[in-house]
Length: 189
Image 1 (cartoon, rainbow, N blue to C red):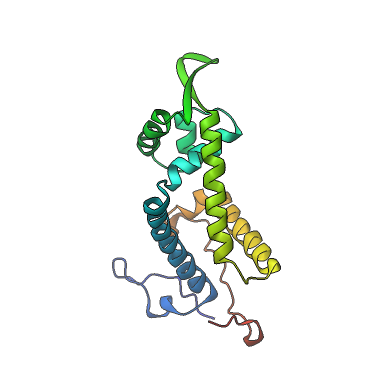
Image 2 (cartoon, rainbow, N blue to C red):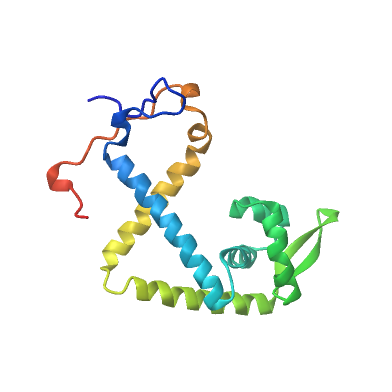
């Protein structure tokens, strides 16, 4: 079976077989479409509910314990400037507060206030209700399987991020080829 991942000699051109409909290509396209759909949903949710993913993520992390702004950026995998902009309305609305960092008096940590805990609880209820409506009619075992597989994919990406970000020529060996599923395993479109 030929390896369809090879690039042609031309700058950035892919070989004709690179676009073959392999399970990996299907997965990449599905994940890409899911990301685009989630972004669109997030923008609409911001308009409808008055909050976006970044403040919600900040509140969720602070519910687990105090954090420095830089820690929030790392954990949310976003730029520190995005965190800084998101903190302004949260602090202004009394949902978070600054506290001196006991380990470094020059720094501060952010903490969730009672108002922040209430807001987080309200947001969770609204989001959960929307997702439950979306998944109405899905068998519970399908939801559990999807959750398990998504966590597994996310873990694989996290565990291999450094290698995945290297240019292909610097990898010790090419990634393994994924065989196409047998006709009996094919998933209907």
